[in-house]
View 1: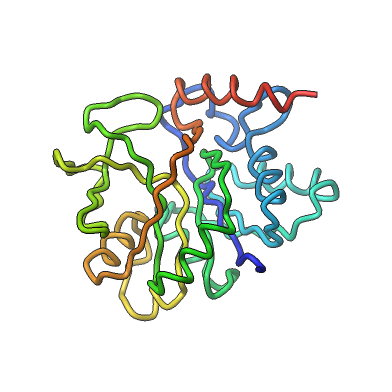
View 2: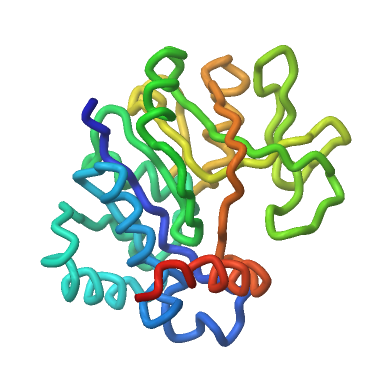
Length: 241
């Protein structure tokens, strides 16, 4: 089965990281002499993705220059979608990138390393026949402040009934794992503003019973926090030559 395009959301300013990402985009933070983005792209190539769209914003030229310097090695079709002078939010960035994406497409964040079977996720998306799919990870505890983050997804009767990164409740035992699949018809069927968060899209799909889910049991690695960077650096040691 041929996988659809995948969109990497890499336009954030990474304010939580302070000096670490002052002069470089978060996705270019170095781990064992390689930028984080390199590890992401190698993983996507291993999973047989052919076309990658990178949504950029903050210091976008540095990401483009890096890709131009290595894509003869990667041999992936990589195109860019730039937010422009004003940030659009994760959902707005998706909306702007639509002309460059396939009918169905994956979405991941530029600060997450998610080593799972993407083909199986896509097969589940096709079988569920919904407009969207969210992968989730069982976090168990609303107050768990480990690298996996706080729980923000509530599942009941085999359905996602709530997802909110701000307004949480005691029944939320899962967290958004970081891989989504969307069908372009989401943006034809429902209105979304130019600037928004991906959460808004997911909440609309939940309301319309159009968001399926897949539980992932393998932990993820992220570089959106200092602790996450430390754990990711340790994990990437196995890739050192």
